[in-house]
Image 1: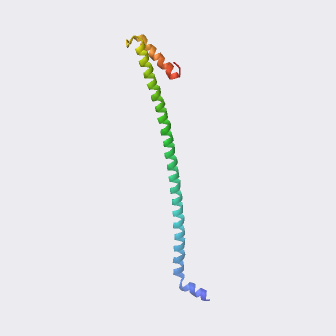
Image 2 (image 1 turned 135 degrees about the horizontal axis):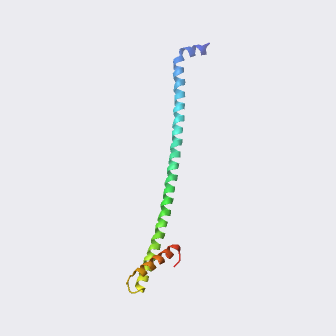
Image 3 (image 1 turned 90 degrees about the vertical axis):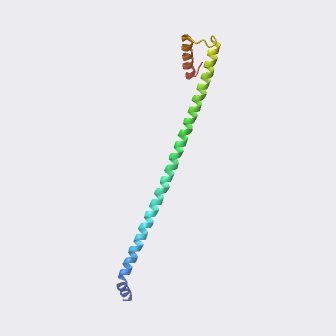
Length: 109
């Protein structure tokens, strides 16, 4: 009987307390959900940045290799020009240099 009387007297307070507890539980769940999503976003961002860095490293290596090839070809062309008629460039020499360059790009001389 005493419990019923207590309930009747505090009915509104009990409702408010239950609503407050449920609200707190919902907010806590939402906060945990948002934190989990933020962690996922940060992880994906870090992975994306790593992929970009790896792609840039590959591109730098490609460009360095191409630069070395071009410098070698320039040196080779200078030598060819110097050895053939002391810089007297004619159509045949240009054609020969173009052929040499094509061979060089394929990996042979």
